[in-house]
Length: 304
Image (cartoon, rainbow, N blue to C red; front, top):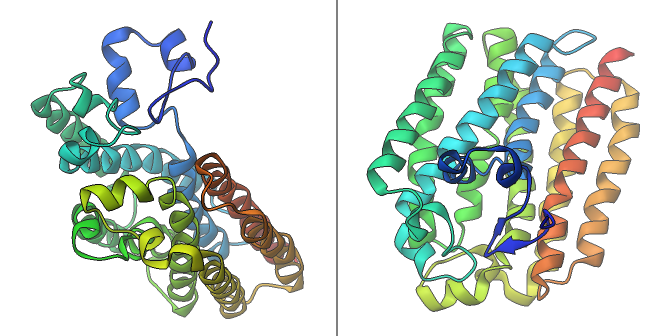
């Protein structure tokens, strides 16, 4: 049996999909990136932060579950749409050429149909929220649809991803309260800088191929100065998350428990090798730990 760490390009093979899923369904689960859940966590956690910050002593578990399902489905839909748009670029890059669409495992018409099915599931979940949250969720589609094109026109597509992936910071508060205040807005901006950090790290995996095919990224724009910029991105992240907690009236344990999260980002920057793709991927994935640490801090700040 192959190890789940074996890769075909950027696709893990020999894992649970190969062992337990019928062959015809495997390309679709890979199109959703279900075998690479880190993106789902990075999409979900800002929403959980906001729900926890807006709620009572304990987060609303119903909303936690709905946002969890929604993150899986909408991250899958985003990946599917991104792969549809980027299919020609992906076919030219060794790391992505084996993905379902460029490899021919999923045809373009079937990918479009699959995207529609995922969006219908996402709509069903959205309709379980209040009216204001439904409007907020629908508005996020403008960011989702335009994101894949940003790498063609700006060296800062990671900023657009930050606007997209952290929308849950606004949506979670809207779902929990039926409105918005300054606290989720500041949390949203903090999440934007967090994404600028971790996705710049991620982009360093592809900088050589991106330069060859004409795709832009912050990794190419910042180059060797990336670690210095990461310090700035992560300092702003921590300052804005702390400010959002202050605006939400969180108690002192919130600030005490933010320290491990700050240390986690410092570890990322201190040990990062931007010329080692494996290390970049490892540091990128470690941001799930950061997200959980922030969530724990918020819950602790609500309990007191």
